[in-house]
Image (cartoon, rainbow, N blue to C red; front, side, top):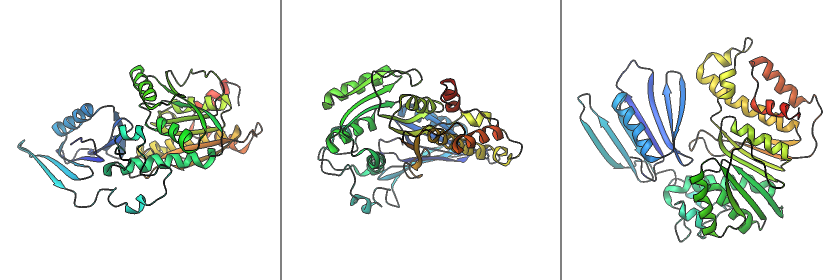
Length: 373
């Protein structure tokens, strides 16, 4: 069921009708898969890094809690059913409705930054493009997501002549390679990009790919977001799906280095959720799922205000459609050079949130320790 073109899986039909565990959904996420467990009024996320691990998780749920799993790819629906007596059946059938890509004929006509017809080698290796430069039908969502990210960058950097970029938590660097191609081949910007990740094997693989593609100003290093020190100036900081407070360290470094541009897609924001309580606004903390979502939004609103206070024009933008990923918010900030005064409205709002909900956000703490607040 976990085919290379899988775009959604739903595990349902609980064995225990009175149980709180209602269903589990899974979808491709970063370099692996993300499981979303619906239990009572709460929602829990779990990321796995390989197809083998995803299959194991799916089997565990089917053996202990559920009787049916439905999976969809670009062509077919796969249905796995287990009867009360333990009999297993498997059905494969054509999708009744067209896959998302098939419904998007209009999207194919859109003037994307990365158009069809050019075989961009990293995207060919990722399976997004064919060797002829055509978009693989089951990868149209990925193709649109990549172009959306480039559009958000293109809005503000297209007139630059040279950029030095740090990509924190680059992983297998799908977007890192695409950014390099966009900067150097499309916008003719002299880009120097450093991808940083904690996994040595991932960095080795990315380094080999950069050499294979002839990307001589793209390099990769093993390193931690928290303690990284660049060799020279940094014009742009990119942080995509850095978990929890790792995003705060990326933003803190960007502020400390005076980076002109910041692009961050936060992920797994647990910090404020674990701290949060309120007497006057207990409505936001009474229900687990409401507190979880409110804490994530509050985290990013606080981050945006702290960046504003430090002289950045900051936006919170939708990165991709909610149908594609639950992590769809991007922080985009451009340095103006005009830092606010000590008691700016932006910082006062942050302090008000901290007092009301008894929280101390990581980015605020880091800036205080650096005497930036």
